[in-house]
Image 1 (cartoon, one colour):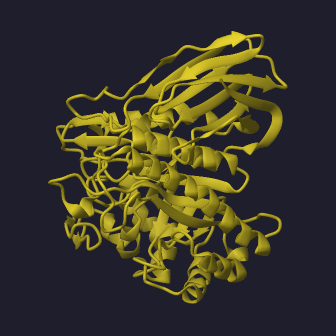
Image 2 (cartoon, helix red, strand yellow):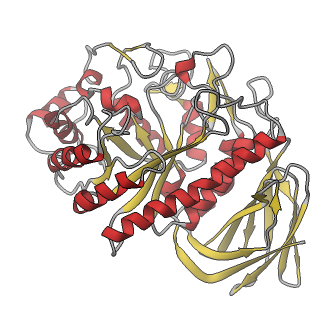
Image 3 (tube, one colour):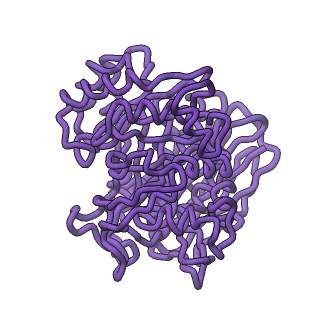
Length: 482
């Protein structure tokens, strides 16, 4: 039996709900057909937003949504996406398709209102101007008399919106301008100067950080920009193969499965290394770390547009999501947000759509199992672990809120059943219930078989104060104790 000890009094910090954030880019069918179908669509919608998708995202308590990119952000000119006569453009990064700009600022903020989540907007530093970025913030948040406020009113919105999270550029070391760190810091300092706070709206400014392991980029930004930012972002994708041959999302052997889990776990060391650099310039930890984009990245599904990044989602993805969220939770004093890429129909999405049909992915169900951690106190735990094919077999998070304690735990082994005995220090357990997500590693949901991978009840016993349960192979579970 694997021994798990949870110390209810060893509070690490509060798990920011935004660790369970999502990312939506004008890429493939994430926006059009995924989140947005337009008011005249036969697909049930509210002001153009798909009712089924919105309800599913509300159910997992989506806290924040990042938009419009991604690489698209640094070629997006927001004034093209407001008003009645909207310009068309070519989406040069993703498939070369024509973007008609029918989903713009008003539609995005309407979406966030329907979801009950915070909007996170990535501004165009790569091909845009300081004036353009400054006026976008004025258009959204200023409640007085000004040209941008009047323009907003002309377009049907009398009162300003609330906007907290604002990214000053995206991947400016690559698709956002191929900039050197030394150049970007000067551009960041200049652009953010004109990102004004209007009324009582206060921006949380996020600087573009490293793609993965460019610690010199982090050092340059922290050295010259720390006083001008609230957070620094990083991006990390789990790719089991090479970038030009990533491998199939659904067809893989056990070696490729365990390689994927091992690569997903690497984000812990990468985050810690970036934080170590940040600490040298920010002893009081005033600058947070935001994982803007993360998730699995495989080859696109056969027969789909290579520029749309559409991939299926299996139990392997669910295990990646679980171990990644555990890593973020454990670093909740420094990681303030993490946005999985992406919400619908792109990369490690939580929802897939096809016309009027929708299916929830195994990754979606992990977010359902983990949602109790949002805004809860992360508490310390020790787990008696062992390696399976070179990776730790078990991964877990524990939190408390009110009179309830939540434990999420995953078993990465493809073959071994694990009996777990959990001892809770500093609290007594009167009742416990469990839910589990499990299946073969390649199992996934389709539009014709949407419940192949679904959450089931997990039997839990309390014996002499300890909580005992059994984890099947390739599983993610939630135990709620009261």
